[in-house]
Length: 259
Image (cartoon, rainbow, N blue to C red):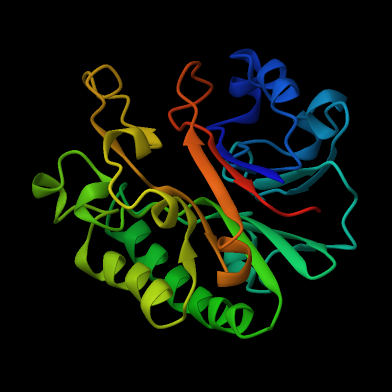
């Protein structure tokens, strides 16, 4: 089973940059999209349902903002849009597809980089999302949570960690929250399980400022985080950088699992 996660930084922009011809060649079973920056009326038929895939979306109420989606080769048993928390769901940050005993989630955690108000909103999201993560970890079902978590967990996960310790995305409280997911709740960082020492090749996001892309001054903020059973079936992972569809790069994981 091939699972791809990609923050599009605008589905229409990524379309213009060739994401769909690339996607057609990937033969992915499941694709998680974040930051659609669009509503249903903005999407073409090819965006809604690319050839061979079924599309499901959770749009933000604000136009041109946020939004998540899932493409699947197989129709799911159920789709869950949102967390049932009004202000979070208004921003279109969570969609879950259920396939038997496996759930796939496309998640877009808020960014706090624009100022104190959005950082407070990010912390509030993290606090209220944590019980849901605990519940799914204890549900007895398998989950893969793909997406842009907007947190670099460890020093290995970004180039300039020393200079970013007071910046959103690498704050001590954010990193501790991620550690809690892995150490106490028992979820698994799939890429790090496979490649515990990868540095530069693991980055998934680069600032548009300066020469960040050219110099590979990146951050690993896109993850596939899974329950232990399905995480143990991951056999390979990679970040695709040959073409650029966004300021993020696709994270691809191969699982020894039949959907």
